[in-house]
Length: 170
Image 1 (cartoon, rainbow, N blue to C red):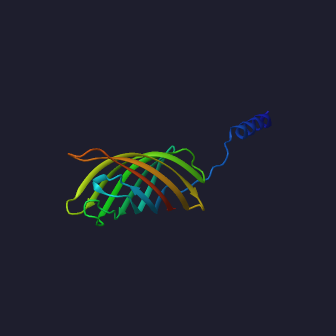
Image 2 (tube, rainbow, N blue to C red; image 1 turned 120 degrees about the vertical axis):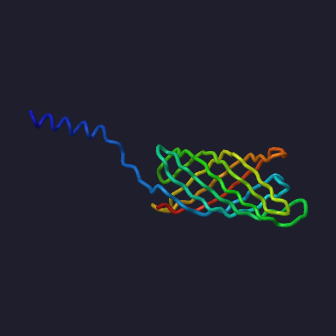
Image 3 (cartoon, rainbow, N blue to C red; image 1 turned 90 degrees about the vertical axis):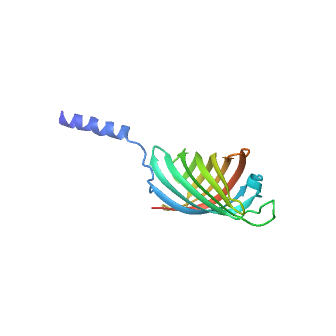
């Protein structure tokens, strides 16, 4: 009788087992290159940017993410290069958590443009992207984002951003 119960327990365990899944690290830091089309936000033309990004896996497919962009757009008013910084903080949902990770998310961002008169904007924007793990600790990814920036006494500004990046997980 003991053998029968043992056999039933083994069969139940085998039927209830789930497939093995790859486990990746929870933190990442990376770099990205991209293009930010300002659509004349603050009188600026579109420009390439260099980004430093980081992520922290929370739970159930959600990640906390940060992307800080530095750029040198051309000012339409005086046709000179200016410095722009755009740090952001957001959350994204991973549809899959395997070696291919498509996601959607939203960021809150801040845009400061350092020129003769400094311009400050606060924005929010949805984003979409995909990361592909080329090894257990390195991923490559593509990302697109559409931001809405607001500032006092100015119209709502819009920006389209696209980037490609590499991240190391630890």
